[in-house]
Length: 600
Image 1 (cartoon, one colour):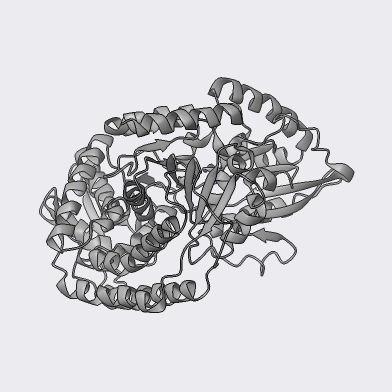
Image 2 (cartoon, rainbow, N blue to C red):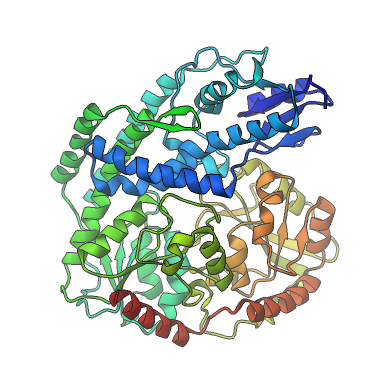
């Protein structure tokens, strides 16, 4: 290879636009961004499994020390996973890619983004909000760029982009952001404590299961189980600030069942909320500098730690409200605590609550989670996977936690009726009720909707509904005023699927849920990293896949063929997967798991 190879590092869209304008035929771009204009060699940031496992272990040990050195409550340990995935891992992935390229292209010159007003290094925690979805509320070049420069300048040849981008100082953004988060969370917690349900169905705590639910999405996943189980279940309803109406949703779905008891979170009082948030000021003043070292890089996590401290106020109120709700009913012991959280700070708090009330606890896998090492993969006594295949994949990924992984049945797949009945899908009068399960990337969603909207033919027309991704805040109604957009489904996923004749989705966790239901669907893979490079892990064998616009339109034009094909594929999937959907077997397995964990 030529010694003159230029390797452009593109951390933002601005960086990528500049690289595309200047890249030569022998040059490379290292980026995780996607552009239809990419017509050159691209290296995607990565980190090997062994290195990632080692890094996760180092972060775990460091985070424990960090809390002790700053005299912070151990309750904050639940932030360690997002801290790792979104404040540290993005930088390491780029430096690993740089090393790989340097070995293959001797004499390569790395071309780095340079922003005049950003020099000091900051690592932010609020990356965790959108980093995995590709939507970022910070200047990536300013946050990740200085670390990459430190890594490159003593090892390889480099230069800066000739074009200098001017932006508001990241330091100013950080200050604005942290106090904005403080004000938003404080006002939200005040409002939540002014308006609370005073009563639910009176609980007598003779229940087998104590379930904590925080969002409508979580409730939708567990709803098929709740509607069919014979277990006595006490549900503590812990509304989040963004999912108002959760109590009403659960009450309307299972509130009349005699074996289900609803307990709303308890009012703490305004003085308690003021006191909790006032303590944050003292913690911020006492915060020490937080440094983490890895392969010669010194990460400055002081800003990230400050953001965690600010957000901890709401987390501590959550813990106190749940504990008071549990203590408000008869104190005889339930069999087991179920948490619908996976790797979040709330998952850790739920596990602490379980210990405080002397119950074994499990976490129910309720949404897609990648098979990657984490500092704390499982907080509770057990982690219930939704399929046997997922169980085996997590065992490979988390070998130290394999004895905490279980499969008791597919809770979201229970319907209480024959599961292979597709005769209701009739496409009467040539009109197909189509649901498009959109992704988080709004610009790709818009293109896909346009393609579907132009699909009406003489043989078939579509009544289109778009189920939006929870993180997608884009306003689509200006572009598609005659299309129904649903941001959240206020019913179980099975009930939602019954509203439609046909579905289309990108590769995502929705694929698994669709396979447990009877809605004929297919997968569309637009030209995007999230859907092309990692999407294959979501593709059940035999499911129809469209990778081009022509393939998309061809499948849409033949709904009856899709229905017949899906029936065969789903039958094979159910047979080969070893799924347990029978509620009696699932109830029995829960009883056995409760006894197993209780004996430990």
